Amino acid sequence: MSKLSEHFTLAELTVSDTAKQKGLNNTPKGKALENLTRLAEFLEDVRALFGKPIMINSAYRGPEVNAAVGGAKKSDHMDGRAADIRIKDVPVDQVVQAIIGSDLPYDKVIKEFADSKSGGWTHLSIAEAGVTPRKIKLIIDSKGQRPYV
Figure 1 (tube, one colour):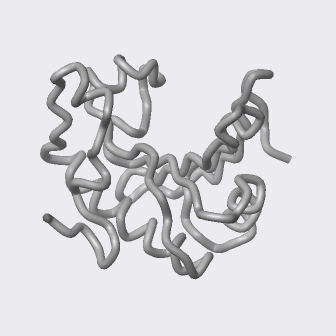
Figure 2 (cartoon, rainbow, N blue to C red):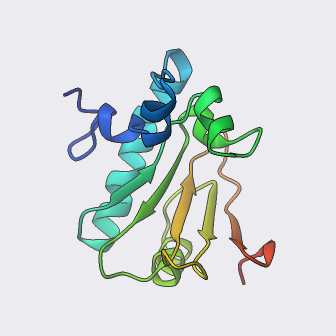
């Protein structure tokens, strides 16, 4: 079990039911692997903000896996710079608001599908190494995409 940070492993950030079901390789290489290490450190800061563990729904998705799940063509997941998370007993809105109100260097925070049966999740992404985070705040749900205000 290869640890990327104190609480996050490579296996945890690359697991994919879709990859297993379709026999797709979801092993990151090069820059994606470097980004996953930076992402794990960022997630440690998010974990500290809430004082509780983070559940990872999805993090790294290779191009084939990303296409199979219907991910965006330029998804940050493919670069190892994004994770979809949940925090037990913390509503998605509260997660998003806490991250926006913190000094965490997120590139994007997206409240995703909170109007669905699953209750949704929070998408977090970090900027490319050496690039200033854009601090983009969005909602994506059954009504489409719009700014988070």
